Image (cartoon, rainbow, N blue to C red; front, top):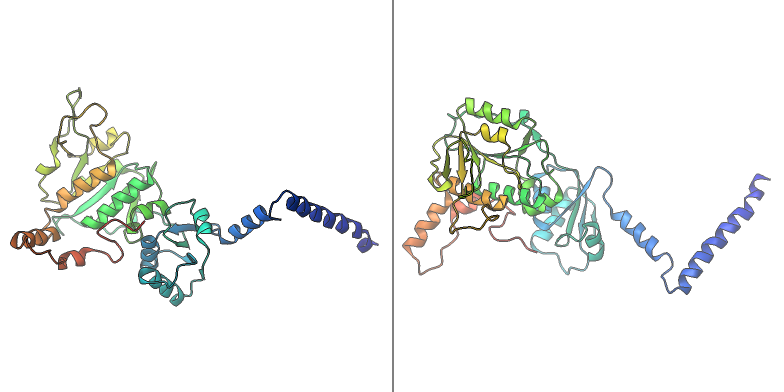
Length: 349
């Protein structure tokens, strides 16, 4: 009786499904088109607690660094003969037993929300800043020319990625972020960093001012950063302020950058022993007295790191002066300081 009673129910359901597809066909729609597309996209969507890393350099460096758990590699279908770094991606994934899927570009576009993925995506475990307690401490006597970059409440992922890329390229030893109100280490950050985020150690602290004061007591110089003071500035900071070009790097230093809008908080600025600024090349109208934080970071870091003994640029400069007629060969020092996969030029789009 129970089984027979379900006959009419299944019959009604079948008629409803048939009617739905018939009506869709009459409207000129592909039966189940939207639903079917969504199901196929869901089959590719990252599982919970995974995120979608995108871009050639971030994916390749993540595979090399082996810091993340990789669930699947997604390579765009239709590319004839994978070559170069894409072929290496495939080789490494197969060697590690990572499943490889070949979706079409439209699927990758939808998965990445139309970010520039370069035909390469990976489902990976998230990456988080490490607690500062896990960092290996160093005394100022170990090396007088040590540079740590401290970031207070950077919130734009592309700014953070660009800062990490410059920090890695120029030889910053460690990066420390404030735990509160800071951008997490997302795939967008990794892409903006050209994958530098995948190979750098990023730490965080929930008491940034206390951290800076503790390092100052250990003999480190804490150098904050401020925008160039204009004539309208009524209250200049009490901490000594100099141009970054006048800064002499003769002891371990923490360079502190502030939030994109408000800069350093009063508490953190009061913890700095010195403030660095970038002087403009012309008289500026109100509202243009500062630089984007990632641009400022590149200028400040290069100004400091170029004082390092054996900085690669010195060898390049001497080579150019000796023979300006012939194009210079790549410096051996440059190759040593460049991480595989981090290009000197702009990343492929």
